[in-house]
Figure 1: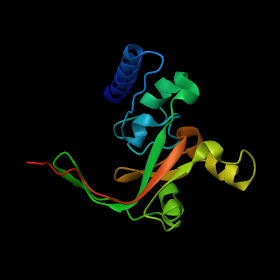
Figure 2 (figure 1 turned 60 degrees about the vertical axis):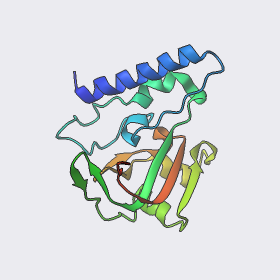
Figure 3 (figure 1 turned 30 degrees about the vertical axis):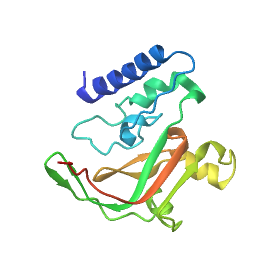
Length: 165
């Protein structure tokens, strides 16, 4: 089996395990990359050298059985710098027609957009339900925002992790 898919299945099992121990009133906050938390498959895989097109099953897809009890936040940003292990990430220029580009045009440095309250019909619903480019690390993938996330959180600038000594 693909190591990434095994990882996502394992992360979902860990979330279930924690919730079982917390009981019916238990809550857990899980923070992971958009590719792991999204509730639907990507429509265009950005990492085809590692994963087959449409072959990934994310932790979020495994956890869809929680229904409305699970709220999945997708994160988007305008600019940033970071690192992947020892390697510096170079983010591509912002595509103005991508999810990230359109959220950046709002002009606020930080905000959340609740997709659960989005219109069910009309141009906004059509836009949210069709494949859109979204940044995934140093590349763009494609997904339908309304299917992948319950809300989108936009941050103007992100930076890499800096160790505290």
